[in-house]
Image (cartoon, rainbow, N blue to C red; front, side, top):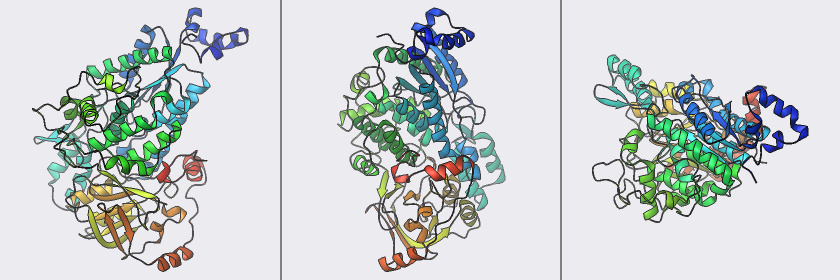
Length: 559
């Protein structure tokens, strides 16, 4: 069979003459119809620096597809800038955009019978949204990450977007001069590329290397560099070969390859959002995967990369130190990942890693040897207890002791919680509860980088706890617990917490506990009244109506 296995449905036969006529209008020749149609899902936009450098990558991919004897078909996917929408009503649309991106990819690939698709993305939800669309369509595919940003600089210090959020807390508490505050603000983001630490964008893109769906070494490249464009072109060439071989995403994305991806996330100290997104990716691919699987992987994989937000280095530093291939080779040698998993190149992961050293270079300290990890176990702990019977996610790196018991300080919105921190009303020992911010409650499960960064900026990162049924940015660290499920909007226990109640966060015991009796819990539940939806029309109303629990990825098709 020829490589146009799918597109021949709309290009071959007498009945398809109208279809071909439309292709002729696009400049096609008769000979083109026997060649594969390759979708280029282009996430370029001038909304955010994360995506403003993607057009050059799309152009490189288009040229490479043509040179490989295939037909590029460009279509767009939207994005929301998490960094810009953070702390505002706009942040409710961020997780929604994951579903919209997935729908865009699936709709275009399936509706146009594309033979393959190359997805290019930048900001956080571009990665899981693109991968979910890829897996739903199951046409040969490859993911091209737009690349990380280079660090900004102020007074000899490397900066990134989280530097600015934390500066808000420091400046508000009188711990930073106005000169430094403005200097950080103006210099933190020097150009194009996604946020520079091991935040959500870099976490997800790095994990796609381990998953087998992106070229090795591609995820830590900086967007402005020539090697990023060259990698996009090479990705296109690899995809055309995969189309010829009929190598499909579901041949690559299996339970074992997801285990590889999650192991890589643990080893690099990646974002809490990876839990939510891999639950959704597994669901899209028909792979059996639960929130408890993350805890299973965490217990056996150490953190070996010293990366922000809780560490010292940025993605560009990781790239110079050997990048994700070096990390994967260390994990492979230690028996912590599956080397026999297929990759988009048609070679196994072990084969792809053959030329990579088994130990990290001695002239760097970004990647640690497996016998000298930063932490003996992974950093994304799944806690359960009477406050979160379905599970929640705690990021425990960077903490001397991830345990706190203290009085609940209850907030039903992010803005009032942030103001309380900035006004000095939150003190050491408090456990902040931010609720009605889950998938249904907000709706859209917004991230909480503003309040968590303000806590850090106020010097309370080790002494104040924060739990929420919303999410955290990949740039968050501290005594924080997110994705509390069931959420408040459906009557989860977090809805029943009252000001002054005693709450325990204990990452050692994997416990999130409200210190009240079962009888008192039942009494409060009987008194609780479910709030109505906040939105009656539009995408937020649809998301509220359709979304499932965070413990299952907050997907819209969990029927």
